[in-house]
Image (cartoon, rainbow, N blue to C red; front, side, top):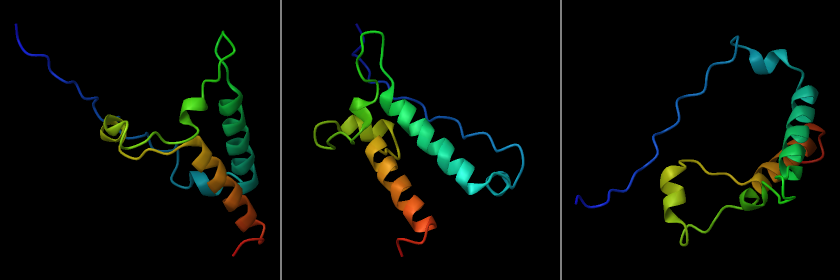
Length: 99
C-alpha cells in the first residue's frame, strides 16, 4: 500500500472582472454600504435546518497555533467580526466622525 498523501486545496481562480472598469464609481457609496450591511446581517443570522448558526465559526479567526493548516489553505483569512468592525469604522469615517 502507498503511504497516505496530504491533499491541499488548489487556489481559487481569480475573481471575474466587473462588467465595466468603473463599477465602484457607478454605484452610489450609500447603496454599496447598505448592501454590505444587509449581506453581513443576513450571513450572521443564517441558520441551518436544525436552527444552528452557520456563521458562528467564522465570527473570529481560529487560533494559528491550533489550526495551522487553516492558514496554509486560506491565504488571506478574515473573520466576519473584523469585517463588521471595519464596515462600522468606514461608515463613521465617511460621515466625518472619525479622522
